[in-house]
Length: 524
Ligand SMILES: *Cc1c(COP(=O)(O)O)cnc(C)c1O
Image (cartoon, rainbow, N blue to C red; front, side, top):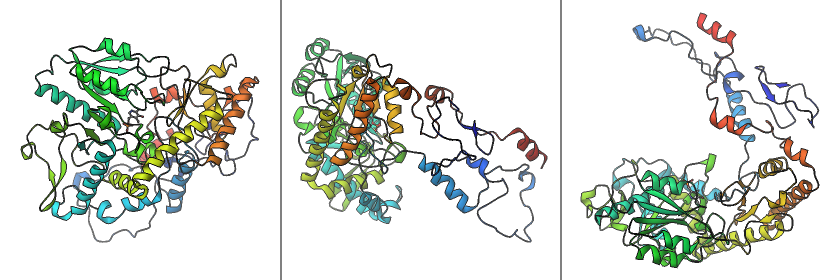
């Protein structure tokens, strides 16, 4: 068994261990790292200061009785700790991140430089408006780009993620229904079976009843089944386009017309807007509200790397109900509308304390301006081209879930693994050994053993070929009966295969000092 310096096992011992043992548990550049509390000693600090003279204790009974137990590390030790931890994580700066539905693309360093400019990075939301005119202009300009790209008349900038944008759109729909006096009768929201979990969750959060629409054989909304579900109690529909199967909903205009005819609203989940930016304007498709994940479509770090931002565009019908605050351009410069009384008073209110994710706004606008309108269109085209290249190469060994071309992500099912004893999870774990982050697995739910691959436009053909070669080799090995290799994978990762369910259900989040230590501290 490999142990760290605290006697905790670092990785399991198994029969098929392919590594020769080292004394330290380290393996070349892969260095075992203990918890920060375990590394130093409690009395150590990064700086040595002389004890202050002549200042008596003025804390009275409030003075500390026991050791504070902060980890004590010298400065280089603290730095090494975090660098080593960072090296245990896969990152978009290390290799392709093929997670479908997440759009993990290159984050240009220019965006980071812009976001750190003092005029954007060092301001406070409570500063007088006259001192942050540049920042307000940036929000206003970004809002203008978003309205232009979507063909929509209004946008709420404050939502802080895609899911928060969905909440914004559905709250606007609720407010519009209230204004019509129909909030009590229109209680049902339709959403396709393949929807991202946040869609039904948002509708339920707003008090609606969720009714799911089946997919047809081509992976799209079943139009007849959808029409049958329409009625006077329908508040609206939530549809993702391109959908979570990576396919364009060809009947989207018919869907919009039908839901409007039935008196409902059309919410579009715009998480996949990067596939159609500059090609199609959601406003022309009859959409009433759509969030845009700035952190997906317009390249800002997300996941472990940073916060999200989910501006939500609104149609003429929903614009009056938009949340506050919003930026307007007046004769004295840019102003913030912060109170309902400043407008018609129909706004449904406030979603967040301040004005949205400023850092994300700067990064998104930096990305837009450096690409230009034509560059954004090309990014969408290249994202679709790359996904279809991956689809075309991989379908020689793997099984596409649906026939035909795809949009920005390629979806496979697990039919190619039938009778191999290898399942989608094993296949994904084997990818880790090959140096790749796995694709999105088991989503969307409508496809058995789903593997959803989104290469994005920012990978080169050479990089895509290396990725495809790896997956094709794995698929061949699975079919050739190398099942045990897949069941054991990953063997090269620091912790091998984890009990992910256990980690999620019973997370161990608190460090407790070894028994001896606790006793000695108490005695001090
Ligand atoms: C990512 C995503 C969301 C949620 O966005 P967050 O920013 O993670 O809250 C919703 N729908 C789809 C289709 C997505 O891919």
